[in-house]
Image (tube, rainbow, N blue to C red; front, top):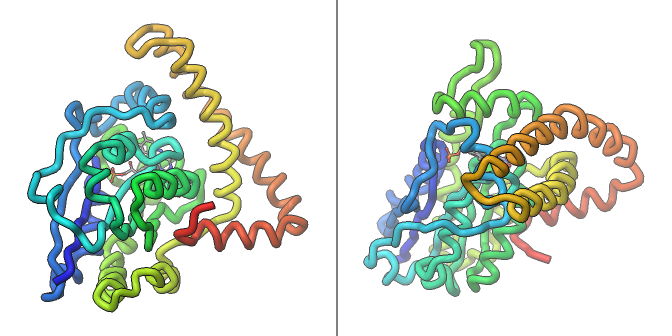
Length: 307
Ligand SMILES: Cc1cc2nc3c(=O)[nH]c(=O)nc-3n(C[C@H](O)[C@H](O)[C@H](O)COP(=O)(O)O)c2cc1C
């Protein structure tokens, strides 16, 4: 009997639905036992988000400064699992703060050590650098990343920027103004996530998890968009400076901090609507000379390797 732990955190329930769909075929298999746990915080983040709270979460999330996570049940912590399916979302180009905080706990250290892990992302579309941060964390925990499934909003980047706000600020995943497409991962992609379950089961039961990602990629578990990788990389450099500035120049809960966070918010809007289109033109101009590097990067970011 193989044992799988499905661990995740979700605010809207989108990621819950995704990991549950992946797990459904595994639960139906008599040779596999599946346990579930939802990560929770001692002091939870609100959902729907008040606007100011949303941007207030930026500096600590980006710098991965842990908050208190509720302990896992002892029955789970004391079990040795053959595989962990680990669902997480991206906040500000980084694993969300509940997730990065959980990875700092003793529970995580015990569970992840020497254990194969499949990461499952449910996010807007900027996840590649967050997954690099996740790869590094898993390496530090001596876990063995064997697979990655990244489900994203497939609409144009700027459309998904417009539609995610109303979802996050009202809690309702519906068509903004009745004209925009629904935000987040499409219901079709969420429903189709069941297709990954049998692939995971086969590799787990045949002890071939080392080749799992090749088969997940054949099932389009991951799509790498080179322009989004460029945006993600450049934005990480800028976010690093902003988060450092806000944390070093102000204290949480003070008017100065609120002011700096507000300036960051306006900068972000400027970056999305003015800088990103310029970066896109530069990207197109350099596409041919950089073609080989872009191709290599695509293969690397789709893989479970870390360099
Ligand atoms: C504070 C915050 C920041 C986010 N930043 C990103 C981001 O940088 N990249 C991205 O692809 N999605 C981002 N998202 C979207 C989330 O990854 C995720 O899709 C959404 O919050 C729904 O996840 P849930 O299952 O927790 O409800 C952000 C969401 C929140 C709340």
